[in-house]
Amino acid sequence: MQKQASKFYSIFFIAAIFTVFLAQLFAPGLTVTSLPEKFLWRNALIEALNNARFQMGDRVFFQAIIGKEKWMYYTGDKSVEDYQKSLKISPRETRNSLQNLDLLDQLVGESGGKLFLFVAPDKQTVYPQYMPDEIPVAGGVSRFDRVLNYWMELGLAVELVDLRMPLIEASSTYQVYQKGDTHWNCIGAYYAYREIMDRIAKIYPETAPHPLTDYEIRSQDLMVRDIPRMLNISHLEEGWDLLPQFSPNRLVIKEQPLEHKGYVRIVENEQKDLPTALVIHDSFYTACFNVLFEQHFSKTYAIHYAFVEDYNDLIKEQQADIVIIETVERYLVTRLSYINSK
Image (cartoon, rainbow, N blue to C red; front, side):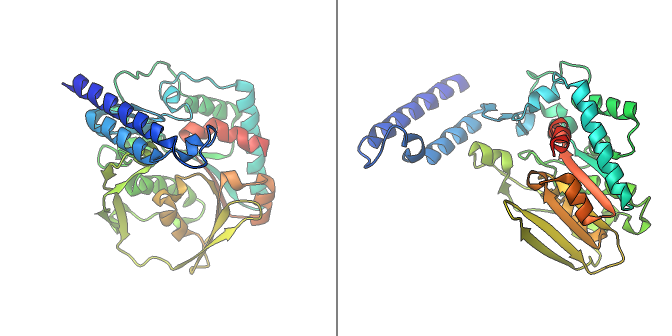
């Protein structure tokens, strides 16, 4: 029955697209080169086709797969190969990158600061049980674990915050990632926040994290998450917010544009006797984590890694007490190389 329905909607959409294609011939100013961008109803047709495929049970899409119980997984940036542990890394390049990270740590230490590398797990690392059975784990050692082996071999002083086990353990009690998103939800962000603040509190006890009981877990309105948006699928999913049951510090937030591109987020805390933080991050930082984290610092200077011109200059300029480089697991090796190139 499903095969017949699949054949029907394939024929239907091929006929619809062919009909619309013929209609383009009468559009004024249309050329062969402009056709891909000016194709009439292009986005609507893609959305209708992908919605129909999703509803009929198709599981393989461009840059995403649908796993068990409609869990969605991002497949770009070699995420599947990383999950299967089939990717290799260059020992020489990895060691060089880690040694450059160690030099950054020494630079941070010159002003009395402490550097942390903070790695957010890929969703398939935390929830492998919902991955399709057709995608087995083939290799023995992940790229992340290979990096850890070199890390221990070199005896780096930089503190690496590996969030895999804390989030896997938390996932037995709570849902910590969205089914339809590449990111953690606010509960997952809380467990990441607790893990890193526990480390920082060893240096600055006043930054100890709030227990989860200090927050009320509230459901969010249904919304389209990032993977359905990627696929042009109108699939709605609820999420969770953490509502503090205490009086949070008042924060003044500024988004300061940079000279060439992007912007930096500068957060000033009303409580001035707290340490300062510099955060070089990707999108996991702004997925609820920052709201929890920024309460604990008198000033937080947060910038996306793509907008960092020079790591050394930024560290010297900010002279922060705590410096965090945050990356998602699938970009770990690339980010280490990226730091090296800067």
